[in-house]
Amino acid sequence: MHPIQVLAVTGGKGGVGKTSISVNLSLALAGLNKRVTLLDADLGLANVDILLGIKATRTIADVMAGECSLADIMVETHGIKVIPASSGVQSLVSMGPGQHAGIIHAFSELADDMDVLIVDTAAGISDSVVSFVRAAQEVLVVVCDEPSSMTDAYALIKLLHRDCQLREFRILANMTRTAEE
Ligand SMILES: Nc1ncnc2c1ncn2[C@@H]1O[C@H](COP(=O)(O)OP(=O)(O)OP(=O)(O)O)[C@@H](O)[C@H]1O
Ligand SMILES: [Mg+2]
Image 1 (tube, rainbow, N blue to C red):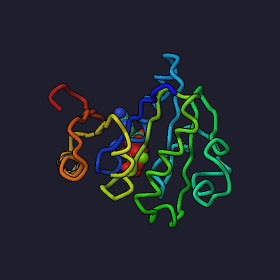
Image 2: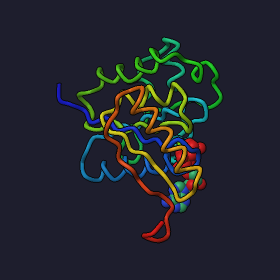
Image 3: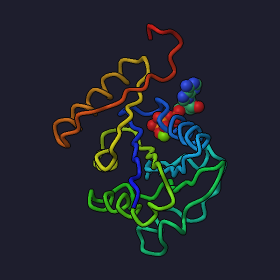
Image 4: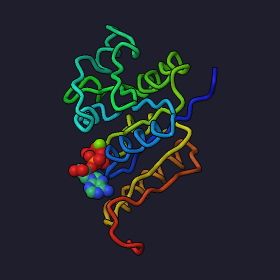
């Protein structure tokens, strides 16, 4: 089995551009002939599907309910594969850490068909976000030039460092107008 690169896009604060960056990075990597899968891990208020204009009939909620496999819910669009989440499904939001890890591990069955897995996480520092991030090898922290974005990103990094022993983070400054920002 070849190794898959798993990259989590996170940031603490809401609205800093995590989903936009996840989608654009996925499309850019696909343009470099990488086989990319984009996982919408914003389980409560999913919106990767909206950005890409896809209409998901089945989502991760159905996989967690044991009704189908991950391969069944994948949608191919714009040269990438998307694993859609559901909006407004409370059972997904309140899933335990073991179940989040289960989603990531379920990808091993699909490993032959992908090079990169991009994980678009929800805002905040919930258990769900932390377990998706710790399952990734690379963590991209999105910040913008706002005090609350800086403090939320700092809090997230501190938590991941202290509780998950993560030591390497990539920082992406989004929505900046000048080099100083
Ligand atoms: N570099 C950018 N330039 C201009 N607009 C941007 C940029 N990045 C993101 N946006 C806009 O900011 C808004 C929030 O972006 P996005 O949904 O990607 O953020 P998010 O971090 O995923 O939000 P959430 O925490 O709600 O999931 C969107 O309207 C998006 O189009
Ligand atoms: Mg988002």
